[in-house]
Length: 457
Image 1 (tube, one colour):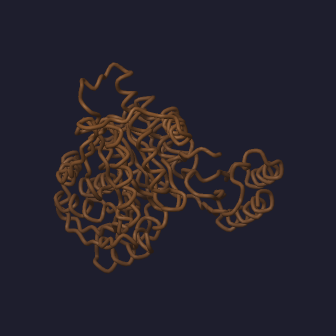
Image 2: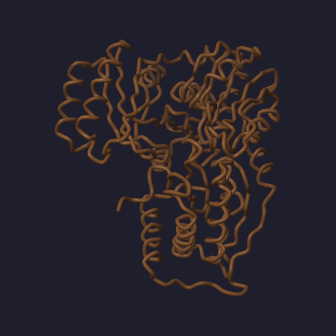
Image 3: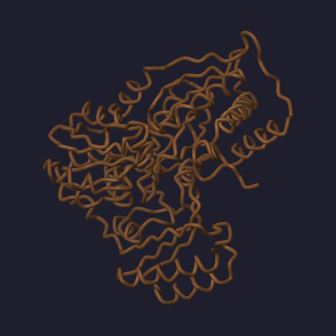
């Protein structure tokens, strides 16, 4: 039986892979493990019940999964604050600011609507280390196999409260940490019909921007459907149509942000990270003069940071690994090409709304266009092919793939690179090739994709 937790929580098709029973059982296990973690580290709960913050994105399946999570937590003696539809980073922030013992977010991020997911936060709003996830999974499996646990009764069961103040508290936090206002900027925001559909436009408007919204009418079924950070066409068109200074696109749970300049050109996570790194260094907030990125970051980003005299540390793919490196080494800024950007002084996880606000603040402060700012780095041609329906667990052990990668690397030489990795959230293998020439990158990537299908199909 494979591990339940992937790179970002537990995900699957709602009511098929991710059932109400699984959501309930995992929540009971998380309540036991995370409450025990608190009391076991000198932070006794002082006779009170543990408290959990629970939020979700607008997916229809989130309604029944939320009910299951709340039931599991309350049955384990946890008081629950239901914050409703809010971004993942909002749940993380509220978990910390309200002094809750754990947080739970129901979302499958950028995945299509039929999917959903559960991610847990520890006290302070921090993502869980692998060891804690493993303990939750072991506890869940023990309970599922019939191992008894002490069930509170009477006044010992958890109470459930709707916490409506979460929206305003989170938006006030976002606006309050901006270095400057956004007055004079017209900005188009694509909320992906997701968790940021209300939050992001409100935050930008309070910060002074003239806001145009698209993808801001979630109905439970249309999340990420042809819009948001995975489909930038609508945002490009809207920015040009409205003569906006820039556009910002979120994914379903708004922990990431991509952007579009006034000409409709995409500004990816690497470019956003480069712009913010230079701004933070100028402000004296780029601790240790270092930015953290991943092995998927474009080689152009690394070269831009070298030219600017900024150090770069590379991690495995996944914002959790970026975050671990940042926390472990005391760095202030990190992120991924996909738009997960972490500003650790103001957030414990990737925050798409905060990222967009910080990017817009840089435009406002410098008086330069987003396109000019992003030109600090030149993106080398990069081709990414997702290969579905293969055994992704054998990527690292297949002799045929090892040989194919070695041949590709020899062909590319020092002007390019190859990366094959199993997706942490979907049943597929990602093939990434960079080269000085796009046609060469495409040809090598297609050849490697065929090799993956042949070796692992």
